[in-house]
Amino acid sequence: VSKSRHLHEPLKTTQQTQLPIGVFDSGVGGLTVLRALRSQLPDEKFIYLGDTARLPYGTKSASSVERYSVQAARFLVSRGIKCLVVACNTASAVALSALRAAFDPLPVIGVVEPGAAAACAASRTGHIAVLATEGTVRGGAYQRAIARLRSEAVVYAQPCSLFVALAEEGWNEGAIAETIARRYLQEILNDGRIDTLLLGCTHFPVLTPAIARVVGSEMGIVDSAVTTAAVLAEELRRHGLQATGEAAPAPRLMATDSPERFARVGSRFLGETFAAAQVELVDLGTP
Amino acid sequence: VSKSRHLHEPLKTTQQTQLPIGVFDSGVGGLTVLRALRSQLPDEKFIYLGDTARLPYGTKSASSVERYSVQAARFLVSRGIKCLVVACNTASAVALSALRAAFDPLPVIGVVEPGAAAACAASRTGHIAVLATEGTVRGGAYQRAIARLRSEAVVYAQPCSLFVALAEEGWNEGAIAETIARRYLQEILNDGRIDTLLLGCTHFPVLTPAIARVVGSEMGIVDSAVTTAAVLAEELRRHGLQATGEAAPAPRLMATDSPERFARVGSRFLGETFAAAQVELVDLGTP
Image 1 (cartoon, rainbow over the protein chains, first blue to last red):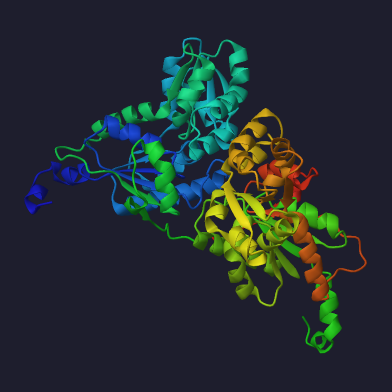
Image 2 (image 1 turned 90 degrees about the vertical axis):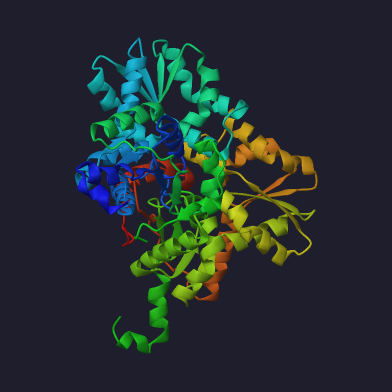
């Protein structure tokens, strides 16, 4: 950044606009969100942190998830970011207000509110099923967010723990994925009024084709990543933080453990192949 | 310990024999080992620590697993134990020598060597399949242990990541468990020479009936927990550390996160129901 830029008022802003957007998740799942963000905001730089040393967050207590989230966010903030996207449903559900308080005035965006908004907009019957991890379902954040946006909505929440393992194993499609999906979704299908499935876990978008085969084409399937990208775009506009000009480089990828596994499993989630050598192993400063 | 006590050699021993045996795992899986230990050593007291805040170890790097294991062991040692059982395959595979060095002369027993010994003894053909998590398979500890014990053995190692999620979901039996088992075991069945399956993950014993239906009655299924109990009994004898007299109380259970989930999922692994209130939430002293 040249010195002359500092003379104009937009100057500090200009520096800021060129900063990357920080994205974090407990592991590789948030790469489905990063994929949607990049696709909708091609001019933006991204820096992604997967806290693979402590995954999964979905089975941890709220206080642990909050502590881990603040540590991960602090790390990204220390690298310089203009906005934080919490690309993890569990962390979005329990740690968002702690993150906003800790890093104010940094804009912090979670995936729960955008996902809930998308589901509320998509459903005609107002009967919505949230598919998520056990922790997210039990925490009730999606149920509360939907109730706030559409008070007459009826929400059915279904924990789908095996979907995470299926997605990580790469068994996204085929008989096993469909059999498991059928077992989890049978009650939802039996209900007869539910017309919208909200994928409340960032791992689940890679299972969309298998889920769609089980529920049929009449059922809407909402992925919060797409709406999160729209919310992020609006937030950047509102703060005058949109990147300008330069073509964005490839996202910078970091993990707290096992870059090799992060690359191997994560490539499927990001939708493009990257190597372990492109993943920086980082330490959040606590053992 | 008062000074005079040190003058009598047997006194210290008598105190020591009444100490509990420490057992640790990354989560609930090691409760299958605890179950076997209690069944074979009914006079012994046990104290169990599940490091649920940092599970699973199976996808973590060796250096992280070693650090976590030493922290968990230090915690148990601080509570007073006479022997340590590492009821976690991943930790047994990568952390055993670090633990022995750190806590010498405390006897430290892992599950890998006993499991490998049982499989070598059970197999007639010398063709053995190890079923384990991705991390355990990649680490190669079972392959090395079997090669040491029976150099002509041919070892086939199969990662079965979904078995962990299946066991935790409680879908131990039925069509889904068998379909997944068939997919993982197809190559082993096709091989035609393998006559012994070694369950190299403490989660897998609850899946034994489903695995047995897939592989048929000719295939031996070896669970390291049973052999580990025999090794522990021998180790206690060798050190003169067997408990005497008193009926042992119920094991003391501790977890580093979510006692509620530990109790709900763990009861299936221990083979008896216990409540969250019986699980002490502990902090290993590091955030």
